Length: 385
Image (spheres, helix red, strand yellow):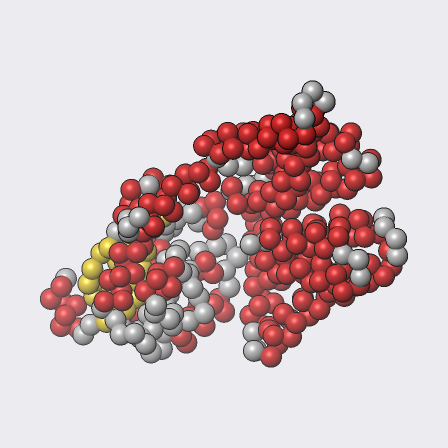
Protein backbone atom coordinates (compact mmCIF):
# COMPACT_ATOMS: atom_id res chain seq x y z
CA UNK A 1 0.00 0.00 0.00
CA UNK A 2 2.91 2.31 0.64
CA UNK A 3 4.10 2.06 -2.98
CA UNK A 4 0.92 3.47 -4.55
CA UNK A 5 0.86 6.89 -2.79
CA UNK A 6 4.65 7.08 -3.23
CA UNK A 7 4.29 6.57 -6.98
CA UNK A 8 1.55 9.19 -7.23
CA UNK A 9 3.63 11.62 -5.14
CA UNK A 10 6.55 11.16 -7.53
CA UNK A 11 4.23 11.74 -10.49
CA UNK A 12 2.98 14.95 -8.88
CA UNK A 13 6.51 16.20 -8.22
CA UNK A 14 7.56 15.58 -11.83
CA UNK A 15 4.39 16.71 -13.63
CA UNK A 16 2.50 19.24 -11.47
CA UNK A 17 2.53 22.84 -12.71
CA UNK A 18 0.89 24.69 -9.80
CA UNK A 19 1.02 24.87 -6.03
CA UNK A 20 -2.13 22.74 -5.81
CA UNK A 21 -0.44 19.85 -7.59
CA UNK A 22 2.67 20.12 -5.41
CA UNK A 23 0.51 20.24 -2.26
CA UNK A 24 -1.37 17.10 -3.38
CA UNK A 25 1.99 15.40 -4.01
CA UNK A 26 3.05 16.34 -0.48
CA UNK A 27 -0.20 14.99 0.92
CA UNK A 28 0.39 11.67 -0.85
CA UNK A 29 3.93 11.57 0.55
CA UNK A 30 2.46 12.17 4.02
CA UNK A 31 0.03 9.31 3.45
CA UNK A 32 2.97 7.03 2.59
CA UNK A 33 4.61 8.02 5.88
CA UNK A 34 1.46 7.00 7.75
CA UNK A 35 1.78 3.54 6.22
CA UNK A 36 5.42 3.28 7.31
CA UNK A 37 7.61 5.93 8.90
CA UNK A 38 10.65 4.91 6.86
CA UNK A 39 8.86 6.45 3.85
CA UNK A 40 10.26 9.77 5.12
CA UNK A 41 13.51 8.70 3.41
CA UNK A 42 11.60 8.55 0.12
CA UNK A 43 10.73 12.22 0.57
CA UNK A 44 14.39 13.28 0.37
CA UNK A 45 14.86 12.73 -3.39
CA UNK A 46 11.44 14.34 -3.96
CA UNK A 47 12.56 17.46 -2.10
CA UNK A 48 15.78 17.51 -4.15
CA UNK A 49 13.76 17.25 -7.38
CA UNK A 50 11.56 20.15 -6.30
CA UNK A 51 14.56 22.27 -5.37
CA UNK A 52 16.34 21.74 -8.69
CA UNK A 53 13.43 23.16 -10.72
CA UNK A 54 12.15 26.71 -11.11
CA UNK A 55 10.36 28.43 -8.22
CA UNK A 56 11.88 26.00 -5.67
CA UNK A 57 10.65 27.78 -2.55
CA UNK A 58 7.04 27.79 -3.75
CA UNK A 59 7.27 24.13 -4.74
CA UNK A 60 8.88 23.09 -1.47
CA UNK A 61 6.45 25.14 0.61
CA UNK A 62 3.38 23.63 -1.05
CA UNK A 63 4.80 20.09 -0.85
CA UNK A 64 5.72 20.35 2.85
CA UNK A 65 2.35 21.97 3.64
CA UNK A 66 0.50 19.11 1.96
CA UNK A 67 2.46 16.49 3.90
CA UNK A 68 2.00 18.40 7.18
CA UNK A 69 -1.75 18.67 6.57
CA UNK A 70 -2.19 14.91 6.21
CA UNK A 71 0.00 14.10 9.22
CA UNK A 72 -1.68 16.87 11.26
CA UNK A 73 -5.20 15.60 10.46
CA UNK A 74 -4.20 12.12 11.53
CA UNK A 75 -2.81 13.49 14.80
CA UNK A 76 -5.99 15.52 15.36
CA UNK A 77 -8.13 12.43 14.78
CA UNK A 78 -6.12 10.52 17.41
CA UNK A 79 -6.56 13.36 19.91
CA UNK A 80 -10.30 13.73 19.28
CA UNK A 81 -10.89 9.98 19.66
CA UNK A 82 -8.77 9.80 22.85
CA UNK A 83 -6.34 7.49 21.06
CA UNK A 84 -3.24 9.67 21.23
CA UNK A 85 -1.88 8.29 24.54
CA UNK A 86 -1.85 4.58 23.53
CA UNK A 87 -0.67 5.55 20.05
CA UNK A 88 2.27 7.51 21.47
CA UNK A 89 3.05 4.70 23.90
CA UNK A 90 3.29 2.19 21.07
CA UNK A 91 4.94 4.29 18.37
CA UNK A 92 7.42 6.34 20.39
CA UNK A 93 8.32 3.90 23.15
CA UNK A 94 7.62 0.26 22.34
CA UNK A 95 8.47 0.32 18.64
CA UNK A 96 11.86 2.05 19.06
CA UNK A 97 12.69 -0.37 21.88
CA UNK A 98 11.66 -3.29 19.68
CA UNK A 99 13.83 -2.09 16.81
CA UNK A 100 16.83 -1.46 19.04
CA UNK A 101 16.39 -4.89 20.65
CA UNK A 102 16.43 -6.57 17.24
CA UNK A 103 19.52 -4.63 16.20
CA UNK A 104 21.51 -6.09 19.09
CA UNK A 105 21.80 -9.29 17.07
CA UNK A 106 22.95 -7.56 13.86
CA UNK A 107 25.60 -5.16 12.62
CA UNK A 108 25.79 -2.62 9.83
CA UNK A 109 27.84 -5.06 7.74
CA UNK A 110 25.50 -8.02 8.32
CA UNK A 111 22.44 -5.93 7.39
CA UNK A 112 24.15 -4.63 4.26
CA UNK A 113 25.00 -8.19 3.28
CA UNK A 114 21.41 -9.31 3.79
CA UNK A 115 20.09 -6.40 1.73
CA UNK A 116 21.92 -7.61 -1.40
CA UNK A 117 22.58 -11.32 -0.80
CA UNK A 118 19.15 -12.56 0.29
CA UNK A 119 17.30 -11.39 -2.86
CA UNK A 120 19.48 -13.65 -5.02
CA UNK A 121 17.52 -16.61 -3.58
CA UNK A 122 14.07 -15.03 -4.01
CA UNK A 123 12.45 -15.04 -7.45
CA UNK A 124 10.06 -12.23 -6.51
CA UNK A 125 12.68 -9.87 -5.07
CA UNK A 126 15.96 -10.44 -6.92
CA UNK A 127 15.03 -8.99 -10.34
CA UNK A 128 13.42 -5.97 -8.68
CA UNK A 129 16.51 -5.10 -6.64
CA UNK A 130 19.01 -5.66 -9.43
CA UNK A 131 16.94 -3.81 -12.04
CA UNK A 132 16.67 -0.85 -9.68
CA UNK A 133 20.43 -0.83 -9.15
CA UNK A 134 21.73 -1.60 -12.65
CA UNK A 135 19.15 0.58 -14.40
CA UNK A 136 20.87 3.68 -13.09
CA UNK A 137 23.77 3.11 -15.51
CA UNK A 138 21.80 3.54 -18.77
CA UNK A 139 19.77 6.28 -17.08
CA UNK A 140 22.94 8.32 -16.70
CA UNK A 141 23.67 7.77 -20.42
CA UNK A 142 20.19 8.06 -21.95
CA UNK A 143 18.86 10.82 -19.72
CA UNK A 144 20.43 14.06 -18.74
CA UNK A 145 22.95 13.64 -15.96
CA UNK A 146 20.73 15.47 -13.46
CA UNK A 147 17.84 13.05 -14.09
CA UNK A 148 20.17 10.09 -13.69
CA UNK A 149 21.43 11.49 -10.40
CA UNK A 150 17.84 11.88 -9.21
CA UNK A 151 17.12 8.25 -10.10
CA UNK A 152 20.24 7.13 -8.22
CA UNK A 153 19.03 9.12 -5.18
CA UNK A 154 15.66 7.38 -5.50
CA UNK A 155 17.33 3.95 -5.51
CA UNK A 156 19.43 4.84 -2.46
CA UNK A 157 16.43 6.26 -0.57
CA UNK A 158 14.23 3.22 -1.16
CA UNK A 159 17.09 0.83 -0.39
CA UNK A 160 17.58 2.83 2.81
CA UNK A 161 13.91 2.25 3.67
CA UNK A 162 14.57 -1.49 3.60
CA UNK A 163 17.93 -1.28 5.36
CA UNK A 164 16.63 0.95 8.17
CA UNK A 165 14.14 -1.69 9.30
CA UNK A 166 16.81 -4.34 9.80
CA UNK A 167 14.37 -7.00 8.53
CA UNK A 168 14.56 -8.56 5.11
CA UNK A 169 11.40 -10.47 4.34
CA UNK A 170 10.13 -10.20 0.78
CA UNK A 171 7.69 -7.38 1.50
CA UNK A 172 10.39 -5.19 3.05
CA UNK A 173 11.90 -4.80 -0.43
CA UNK A 174 8.69 -3.46 -1.99
CA UNK A 175 9.70 0.24 -1.87
CA UNK A 176 12.36 -0.67 -4.48
CA UNK A 177 9.54 -1.52 -6.87
CA UNK A 178 9.20 2.16 -7.79
CA UNK A 179 12.79 2.82 -8.99
CA UNK A 180 12.88 -0.69 -10.45
CA UNK A 181 9.87 0.14 -12.62
CA UNK A 182 11.48 3.39 -13.78
CA UNK A 183 14.80 1.70 -14.49
CA UNK A 184 13.05 -1.16 -16.26
CA UNK A 185 11.28 1.35 -18.48
CA UNK A 186 14.60 3.03 -19.25
CA UNK A 187 16.20 -0.30 -20.13
CA UNK A 188 13.31 -1.19 -22.44
CA UNK A 189 13.46 2.22 -24.08
CA UNK A 190 17.18 1.65 -24.62
CA UNK A 191 16.32 -1.64 -26.35
CA UNK A 192 13.78 0.16 -28.54
CA UNK A 193 16.33 2.83 -29.48
CA UNK A 194 18.91 0.16 -30.38
CA UNK A 195 16.51 -1.86 -32.55
CA UNK A 196 15.25 1.30 -34.23
CA UNK A 197 18.72 1.90 -35.65
CA UNK A 198 18.24 -1.12 -37.91
CA UNK A 199 14.44 -1.44 -38.21
CA UNK A 200 11.31 0.77 -38.44
CA UNK A 201 9.82 2.30 -35.31
CA UNK A 202 6.89 -0.14 -35.31
CA UNK A 203 9.24 -3.13 -35.35
CA UNK A 204 11.30 -1.63 -32.50
CA UNK A 205 8.22 -1.09 -30.35
CA UNK A 206 7.06 -4.62 -31.19
CA UNK A 207 10.40 -5.97 -29.97
CA UNK A 208 9.90 -4.24 -26.62
CA UNK A 209 6.41 -5.70 -26.24
CA UNK A 210 7.73 -9.13 -27.22
CA UNK A 211 10.26 -8.95 -24.37
CA UNK A 212 7.50 -7.99 -21.94
CA UNK A 213 5.10 -10.71 -23.07
CA UNK A 214 7.70 -13.48 -23.24
CA UNK A 215 8.75 -12.94 -19.62
CA UNK A 216 5.19 -13.11 -18.28
CA UNK A 217 5.10 -16.95 -17.99
CA UNK A 218 8.20 -16.71 -15.80
CA UNK A 219 6.67 -14.05 -13.57
CA UNK A 220 4.97 -14.97 -10.26
CA UNK A 221 2.04 -12.79 -11.37
CA UNK A 222 1.17 -15.40 -13.99
CA UNK A 223 0.74 -17.92 -11.17
CA UNK A 224 -1.43 -15.48 -9.24
CA UNK A 225 -3.59 -14.94 -12.35
CA UNK A 226 -4.11 -18.70 -12.72
CA UNK A 227 -5.20 -18.93 -9.09
CA UNK A 228 -7.64 -16.06 -9.61
CA UNK A 229 -9.05 -17.76 -12.71
CA UNK A 230 -9.47 -20.99 -10.77
CA UNK A 231 -11.55 -19.26 -8.08
CA UNK A 232 -13.57 -17.41 -10.76
CA UNK A 233 -14.30 -20.80 -12.36
CA UNK A 234 -15.83 -22.11 -9.14
CA UNK A 235 -13.05 -23.44 -6.90
CA UNK A 236 -13.57 -22.38 -3.30
CA UNK A 237 -10.95 -20.19 -1.67
CA UNK A 238 -10.50 -22.76 1.08
CA UNK A 239 -9.80 -25.52 -1.46
CA UNK A 240 -7.27 -23.27 -3.18
CA UNK A 241 -5.56 -22.42 0.11
CA UNK A 242 -5.29 -26.11 0.98
CA UNK A 243 -4.07 -27.05 -2.51
CA UNK A 244 -1.38 -24.41 -3.05
CA UNK A 245 1.75 -24.79 -0.85
CA UNK A 246 2.29 -21.01 -0.81
CA UNK A 247 -0.64 -20.65 1.60
CA UNK A 248 0.71 -23.21 4.07
CA UNK A 249 3.60 -22.69 6.47
CA UNK A 250 4.54 -24.52 9.68
CA UNK A 251 3.17 -21.60 11.72
CA UNK A 252 0.47 -20.27 9.37
CA UNK A 253 -2.15 -22.08 7.30
CA UNK A 254 -4.89 -20.05 5.64
CA UNK A 255 -7.20 -23.05 5.22
CA UNK A 256 -6.94 -23.98 8.89
CA UNK A 257 -7.56 -20.39 9.90
CA UNK A 258 -10.72 -20.34 7.79
CA UNK A 259 -12.01 -23.57 9.40
CA UNK A 260 -11.34 -22.18 12.87
CA UNK A 261 -13.14 -18.93 12.02
CA UNK A 262 -16.13 -20.88 10.73
CA UNK A 263 -16.31 -22.92 13.96
CA UNK A 264 -16.18 -19.72 16.02
CA UNK A 265 -18.99 -18.16 13.97
CA UNK A 266 -21.15 -21.29 14.34
CA UNK A 267 -20.69 -21.53 18.11
CA UNK A 268 -21.07 -17.90 19.18
CA UNK A 269 -23.71 -15.22 18.72
CA UNK A 270 -23.38 -12.50 16.08
CA UNK A 271 -22.80 -9.70 18.60
CA UNK A 272 -20.78 -11.78 21.04
CA UNK A 273 -17.23 -10.71 21.85
CA UNK A 274 -14.50 -13.34 21.96
CA UNK A 275 -10.86 -13.28 23.05
CA UNK A 276 -8.19 -14.58 20.67
CA UNK A 277 -4.73 -15.18 22.13
CA UNK A 278 -2.61 -16.02 19.12
CA UNK A 279 -0.71 -14.44 16.26
CA UNK A 280 -3.56 -14.05 13.75
CA UNK A 281 -6.06 -11.21 14.18
CA UNK A 282 -7.68 -12.56 11.00
CA UNK A 283 -9.60 -14.99 13.22
CA UNK A 284 -11.73 -12.14 14.54
CA UNK A 285 -12.12 -10.67 11.08
CA UNK A 286 -13.14 -13.90 9.33
CA UNK A 287 -15.45 -14.99 12.18
CA UNK A 288 -16.97 -11.45 12.34
CA UNK A 289 -16.58 -11.38 16.11
CA UNK A 290 -15.15 -8.37 17.98
CA UNK A 291 -12.26 -8.73 20.43
CA UNK A 292 -12.82 -8.06 24.13
CA UNK A 293 -9.78 -5.77 24.36
CA UNK A 294 -7.64 -3.61 22.10
CA UNK A 295 -5.04 -6.40 21.91
CA UNK A 296 -5.70 -8.07 18.57
CA UNK A 297 -2.92 -10.56 19.27
CA UNK A 298 -0.49 -11.23 22.05
CA UNK A 299 2.55 -9.31 20.81
CA UNK A 300 2.75 -7.06 23.89
CA UNK A 301 3.09 -10.13 26.11
CA UNK A 302 5.58 -12.02 23.96
CA UNK A 303 8.47 -9.64 23.57
CA UNK A 304 11.33 -8.54 25.78
CA UNK A 305 10.05 -4.97 25.92
CA UNK A 306 6.69 -5.87 27.50
CA UNK A 307 5.31 -3.60 30.24
CA UNK A 308 3.39 -4.51 33.39
CA UNK A 309 0.73 -1.94 32.44
CA UNK A 310 -0.51 -4.30 29.74
CA UNK A 311 -1.19 -7.06 32.29
CA UNK A 312 -3.37 -4.68 34.31
CA UNK A 313 -5.20 -3.51 31.20
CA UNK A 314 -5.86 -7.08 30.09
CA UNK A 315 -7.13 -7.99 33.55
CA UNK A 316 -9.60 -5.09 33.38
CA UNK A 317 -10.78 -6.18 29.93
CA UNK A 318 -11.37 -9.76 31.14
CA UNK A 319 -13.29 -8.80 34.29
CA UNK A 320 -16.35 -9.96 32.38
CA UNK A 321 -14.95 -13.21 30.94
CA UNK A 322 -16.05 -13.87 27.36
CA UNK A 323 -17.87 -17.07 26.47
CA UNK A 324 -15.04 -18.17 24.17
CA UNK A 325 -11.26 -17.87 24.39
CA UNK A 326 -9.18 -19.06 21.42
CA UNK A 327 -5.54 -19.96 22.12
CA UNK A 328 -3.05 -20.72 19.38
CA UNK A 329 -0.12 -23.11 19.45
CA UNK A 330 3.04 -23.74 17.42
CA UNK A 331 3.16 -20.04 16.53
CA UNK A 332 6.44 -19.04 18.16
CA UNK A 333 8.36 -16.58 15.97
CA UNK A 334 11.61 -15.88 17.72
CA UNK A 335 12.88 -13.72 14.87
CA UNK A 336 9.91 -11.38 15.37
CA UNK A 337 9.14 -11.50 19.08
CA UNK A 338 12.45 -12.57 20.60
CA UNK A 339 10.94 -15.58 22.43
CA UNK A 340 10.62 -19.27 21.57
CA UNK A 341 7.41 -19.70 23.57
CA UNK A 342 4.20 -20.24 21.62
CA UNK A 343 0.79 -18.84 22.59
CA UNK A 344 -0.26 -21.97 24.49
CA UNK A 345 2.78 -21.91 26.77
CA UNK A 346 2.54 -18.14 27.20
CA UNK A 347 -1.12 -18.46 28.18
CA UNK A 348 -0.24 -20.92 30.95
CA UNK A 349 2.51 -18.66 32.28
CA UNK A 350 0.54 -15.43 32.07
CA UNK A 351 -0.58 -14.19 35.52
CA UNK A 352 -4.03 -13.10 34.32
CA UNK A 353 -5.01 -15.35 31.44
CA UNK A 354 -3.50 -18.60 32.76
CA UNK A 355 -5.56 -18.82 35.99
CA UNK A 356 -8.68 -17.58 34.18
CA UNK A 357 -8.58 -20.34 31.57
CA UNK A 358 -7.61 -22.99 34.13
CA UNK A 359 -10.38 -22.13 36.61
CA UNK A 360 -13.30 -21.06 34.45
CA UNK A 361 -12.96 -22.67 31.00
CA UNK A 362 -13.07 -26.09 29.35
CA UNK A 363 -11.34 -27.05 26.12
CA UNK A 364 -14.21 -27.71 23.72
CA UNK A 365 -12.52 -28.24 20.37
CA UNK A 366 -9.16 -28.20 18.62
CA UNK A 367 -9.07 -26.91 15.04
CA UNK A 368 -5.57 -27.20 13.64
CA UNK A 369 -3.34 -25.02 15.81
CA UNK A 370 -6.26 -23.38 17.61
CA UNK A 371 -7.77 -24.59 20.87
CA UNK A 372 -11.30 -23.41 21.65
CA UNK A 373 -12.01 -22.82 25.36
CA UNK A 374 -15.67 -22.33 26.33
CA UNK A 375 -16.70 -20.96 29.71
CA UNK A 376 -17.97 -23.78 31.92
CA UNK A 377 -18.81 -24.53 35.57
CA UNK A 378 -16.75 -26.47 38.11
CA UNK A 379 -18.62 -29.75 37.55
CA UNK A 380 -17.97 -29.65 33.82
CA UNK A 381 -14.29 -29.01 34.38
CA UNK A 382 -13.99 -31.88 36.86
CA UNK A 383 -15.84 -34.27 34.54
CA UNK A 384 -13.69 -33.38 31.51
CA UNK A 385 -10.47 -33.82 33.47
